[in-house]
Image (tube, rainbow, N blue to C red; front, side):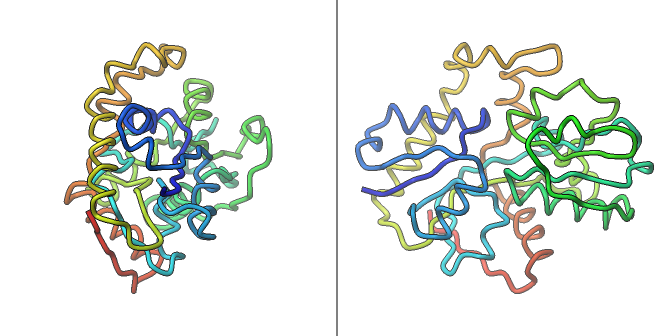
Length: 254
């Protein structure tokens, strides 16, 4: 039995649905965590496969991307945002969400390369959303970002800004292993993910509590989040990781 860890956010629910209804459920031990914990479990060998923030890949000894599915976006993603009450040129301090290293590194790259602005980055703390005032902004991701849409004067969607900067989509998370996985298992695993993705609109009613004037689950799953790790997203993933580690190598094993 393989140990698998996945992100517990709304964006992952279609995948989880597939893993819950397909026969693969009898071959895995599944845990749900925030992104940083998924990454930590893969780094320590506590799990065999994780839907991890891609920034963890350079830290793994034997990283292998084991699925043609991912959590990506080609433009506005809605759930990885820099929130502020002042325009970007007036921001001088940014609190960084503690739940995902990828988003933290992405916003630092964008400030340096796209906005070309020096700001002070600070680690976030519980309730840091309440510190967004004056010249202080904050990166908020996942379901907490949904809850904060429309609350502040300015929302900078980081995937959208990355697209403006590079012309490419962005990959936030990929299914990665820290060792070789049997091909038969991977075939069944990816078939389960396909089932979940293909049937995502059949489970919308389970998550209607997320709907608001600022957010639609149906639009999120069908437009904002892109689940296929296609060639453009591979190019984007590799560009981002080479900004972190120019010697990074990539292994796709599906």
